[in-house]
Image (cartoon, rainbow, N blue to C red; front, side, top):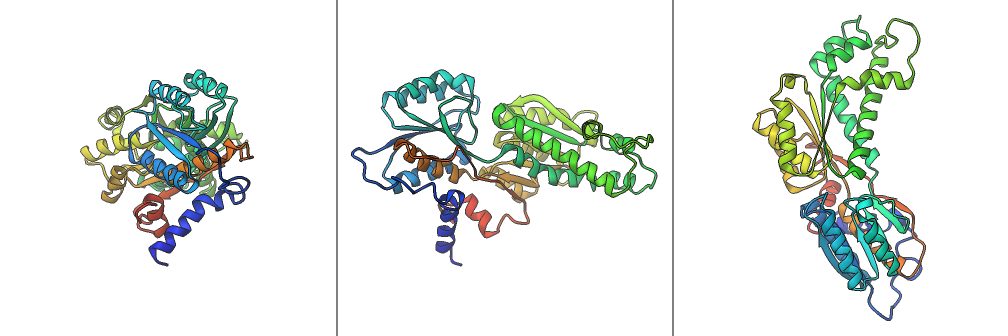
Length: 375
């Protein structure tokens, strides 16, 4: 399959397979008296949002829509997003496609836009505002679980854990004591995406640990003979986690938080680090690289910024959970165009995630996912 054919296939996945009958049915492509104008508002100036912009602009060209693109300074910059919404109202746009940095913080601006008859579409994360028509995003909980399967495997198959598992006399408390503090989580500040990613990650890690203990006939009853409840089992394995509650909005903040643990008295206990977005991933990788811990600490990050990919190539990052930003932008504009004519669109669309490591980085689909406009 040549690259031209591959790109066409990727576009088909982006615009057809995800919602086969919804994108171009009804009035899509129907001549309109006036050109539809759609404001696209994203979170910060990094390559992830650049891919969203490319998708939005491609859809705009194909559908004959005018696109006004604005980007905030960071994922907790509410003021800029409010200003962009107000500007869109003044520009009399037909629809707003926004990756919201906040929920309650944007509600008044959303209400003004809704009162002006502007259709509201979310991408990447969903606000609770009543007039949001749809959200195009990956499942953050599922994405966290994808990351967890790789982290849990590293922890459970580490030398010290395998020695304990293979002793033949280990009980769950012994496993927990051995694994205490093995998993560090560095989260970002946008609660709507960070918290479900962390929740999905922790829950799946615990499920993997429970499965491994049961598979290896580890006594998880604490000697009582009574099978613990799921809640008790989850509580039992919680000491594995260091969930840093200082959420980080910048690369430097994530770097500082990571260094705090990598230079602390329990640094040798850390086996894996999960970073929940681009900035936290870059901060974690910078710290791991400076401490010369690449290959010693397993890093799982999030998103596909070019710097993150470089860390993956160099072995500082071991895996990245990649979303589909191009599709978010493309489908966001496509759905907005349909919504302007009051056509039905799904209330939500899951664009999925892909786990990328050195093993599959150069696979054709991954390269199409990372570089849909140039591959």
